Image (cartoon, rainbow, N blue to C red):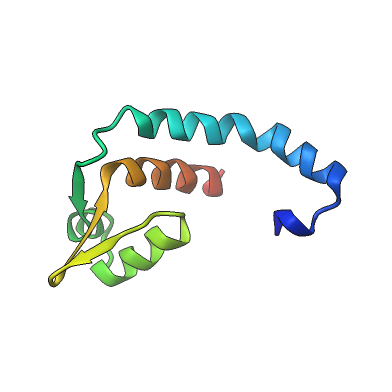
Length: 91
C-alpha cells in the first residue's frame, strides 16, 4: 500500500486506524535512552539468523542499523519501534 497513491477519503480512514498505533510506538520509544545501542549480532543470535540478514530485516521494518568498523548496531530507541512494527505485521 502506497499512502500517497490512495484517494483522500481512504487516507483519512487509514490515518484514523493507524495513528493510535504509530503514536504508541513513538511514546514507547521516547522512554528509552536515545544513546543506548544494541549489537545487531546479539539480536540475530537470539532469533537464529545471520547478522547481515538481521540488518536487512531491521531495515525492512523501519529500523536504521549502522556499521562501526566490522560490527553492526542499532539504537535501542529504533529497535523498540521496529519490534512494535514486527508485531503489527504478524497480526
